[in-house]
Image 1 (cartoon, rainbow, N blue to C red):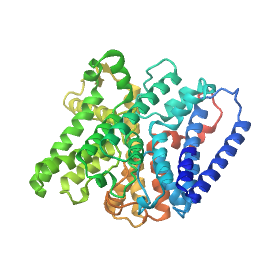
Image 2 (spheres, rainbow, N blue to C red; image 1 turned 120 degrees about the vertical axis):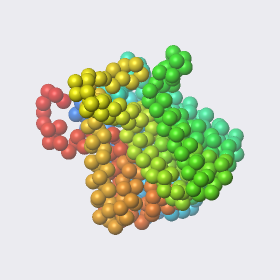
Image 3 (cartoon, rainbow, N blue to C red; image 1 turned 90 degrees about the vertical axis):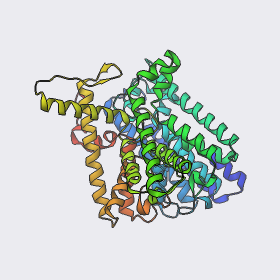
Image 4 (tube, one colour; image 1 turned 180 degrees about the vertical axis):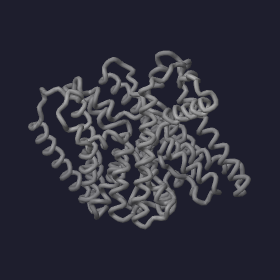
Length: 465
């Protein structure tokens, strides 16, 4: 918080300086209290790992809301909590009706919450705190997204350091290119943070569309795409060359989903809506990559598109990006596994005694992984349905409720209707915002890291934990 506080001081924004100073003091005091009460010699088990991950994410969200609230720019704490949670979970949903009215310090704080939460607060802590030791395995597994928690180094701390190094390099490259493309220094910093975190917060009310620059849009598309790729692929490519890219099933599926969707939307916009080819391709490419990677940047109001492109946008929110990326959603790897399981199921209906395995990248997928994918998908859809019903009870139209549920559970940001690409979440009633905050946290922490805490068995003292 010292960086945005320094910016507020430089800009002469007294209310923001006070807000950041008070929040910093509260954070330091709370940190010291927890440090003194903690047992540094105790060995961290699986239970402690889950509790630590959930606790830290909740704590960061609650504390991260204070600068918005104490500065007076977001007068209600629940709204400030919504904004902070959306930031740290890299969702990009906002309650702000006039983003450009915020001081630069708070705009920077919004983008910083994206950047910290994008790769993972816990992964960052693993690098900084060598005392975590063996417990780092549990922390890493509880936060990193995807069905397979791949380690590219024997030590978890080294893996975390590699991931954050790639993340930082991508951010720096994005900043340099956006600055060269014509953005101001401040805008380039903020959008680099948001882009690589696949968050979607912008300094402009019209998002990336405010710049009206094909070059800026192309750069943003590139880095949204790169941020949606499994980060371990970059490490394997560095070590083994491009042959690892050609063998990666998830990457090929990710590319296929994006390219096919761009083609379908472009054709639909030209044939059904009367667009010229290049404007149609420009809008289709940007919005497809933005939604697939769950970034949420906008250059076009996709609600005025024909029905088919709108439904494709809606379903892309479910899929999301690759495992071990900064993107949200179910993840491409899980979708690939589910599709192949369905194919096997259909084949076995014709040949009951057929024995077949799911193969990814030339390797047979373990039965336990297959079961976990099916369980995760089932739980994800169940929570989506429950959230949709809860939001419909607040007065939202059915499709608006469904869109809001998946836009937050999938960490995508904008939805449809009153929370569409040109709107915001300000009009949602308090109960609805609480539901959406829960969805954002559940989606970012892959459901179980939070849900497991409400199971009585989890708290019983057993050797399994």
